[in-house]
Length: 206
Ligand SMILES: Cc1cc2nc3c(=O)[nH]c(=O)nc-3n(C[C@H](O)[C@H](O)[C@H](O)COP(=O)(O)OP(=O)(O)OC[C@H]3O[C@@H](n4cnc5c(N)ncnc54)[C@H](O)[C@@H]3O)c2cc1C
Image (cartoon, rainbow, N blue to C red):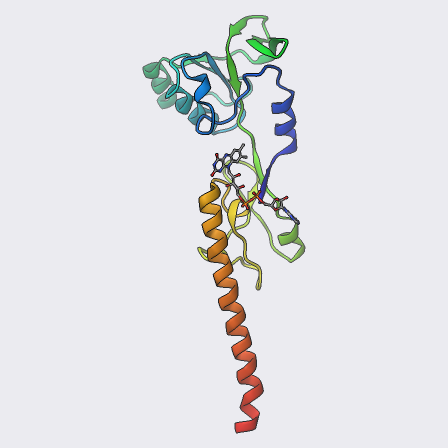
């Protein structure tokens, strides 16, 4: 269980223009060969730039308020022809739902056909916390529940599966984790029932 951080989601949904895309892997084939702008909003934005570079040779990274890229990243950008714009972004220019350009704070317009931002995922840990758990910070921002491979958490009797413990899990991985956790929960219940039965049975044969 995870959700888009509301502030990031609102920002993404407030972005004008039909050509707002978030991930190059799912359904973004339609921007192939087009001018894609990456507005840096997270440490993953650089990775996004390389992913979109698979689809188009017209990728522009807008550093905006993000950190200065390191030398290795700059070398890679240069080798792949990825343009880096240092001036912060003011807004996007779009008319009737069609995106035209990223407008910088100095008034410069950079023509684009699509822009992308990185959302920040925050696992929904309220229930886990109510039961006494403490979520762990995630390197991408947000928080997750730390689990063993079976989904067992550090709170006795509580298992977690899917995005709540693994923000990168896709449907098949999340489903598999759910199956694993279900089997582990059942094994735990069997062990508990058996221990209870043994305890109840023992005095009669003592
Ligand atoms: C934009 C986007 C595109 C994606 N595209 C793909 C794709 O193409 N292919 C793919 O395989 N995966 C894709 N994924 C990932 C996929 O959505 C996840 O892998 C999957 O949803 C994880 O399942 P889950 O059960 O862990 O969490 P969820 O699907 O988030 O289910 C958790 C459920 O628990 C509910 N819940 C949370 N807290 C509580 C509570 N306290 N009480 C009761 N209910 C609660 C939530 O409302 C939710 O319904 C995409 C994800 C995003 C964000």
